Amino acid sequence: MKRMIKIFVVSFMFTLLLSSKIYAVEITNAEKEIFELEHMGLQVLGIENDMRLCLGWMNDDKEEWKEPSEQAVKNLEKIQDKLKGMQFSKEIAPMRGEFIKLISKLQGLYVGVKNKSDETIKSELNDFWSNVESYNNDLKAKIDEFMRIPDFEEGFTPINESRKLFTSEEDRKEFDVLCALMEKKEYFDALIRFENLWGEYKGSPAEGIVVSNLIKCDEKRENNGGMRKEEFLESLSALMDKRIYYPNLWEVFYQWRTMDQFYNHGASNFSVIPNDEYIEKRWQVARVIMKQVESYPEDKWAKLQVIMLMDLPIIERGGPYGNSNLNHWGALFTDLLAEKEEANAEQIKETSD
Image (cartoon, rainbow, N blue to C red; front, side):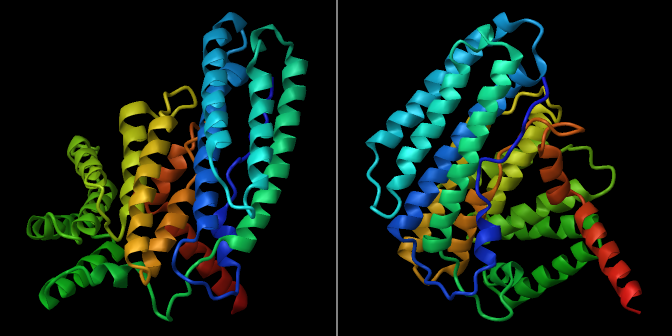
């Protein structure tokens, strides 16, 4: 049975970056409620993603659907119960009823699914995704109205923000040199020098950016083979578990999730994908960053990190070559995207000439 695969999570960054308004930095109650809805939306999508193993590829013995479908119904019920117990502002409250209805549609699909025909399942899936589309449109309208992105000064870049974390001018210049080495793809040389900075900045606000760049260099260099994967996964996990703010904490999570899936679970559509663990870790990190914004309302970069973090899709099954973590791996630990952008820029230049 051919599956319909649609995205349940609204793309925050697409919506927000097209806005011309100048926004405040603090996180409002409406924004917190939207983040809560997205968090629970990710949970629902994670459940649906796991059930794809049954409904998408394991049709031969429908008796095998019984246990996972019953567990999916229970997990969806927990999300519904949490929704019903939450207090929402009058602006966001209408989304709760719509979300509960949407979850009920998915529950209805899974109840007794092993006894349903492929035609019935397809019809109920169509009904579910129709509700998803309606919900997403309404949530997008709330995002347009209430979600606000900070207005950054001209010349702002994450690299410049990271540069401020080093305590001496000498180390700031060293960081500039290492970034230049990475731009030139001289990853091994940069790796050795980032190792030296790591020794100096362990336990400081700069540790996150040093570790993150160290890992990029090691994963991108030739003949790497993931020899330090356990060390790096442990380091990234330790940074998050400190529950303190780093100015690249969203990237620390992104790297950890991508590496954990790649090395510990696999890249195929049949691989285990512990999205429930990843979603809860993401939410833990989001709360740390939101606390930073509450304590330092002028920290525009922190607020943008929350938006980027919550905008990150889950790892999905259904890709032509495997699960979607392959795309995340390519974005983080290869130069394929940069090379494609360079090729496109060159093509545009040639056309204009």
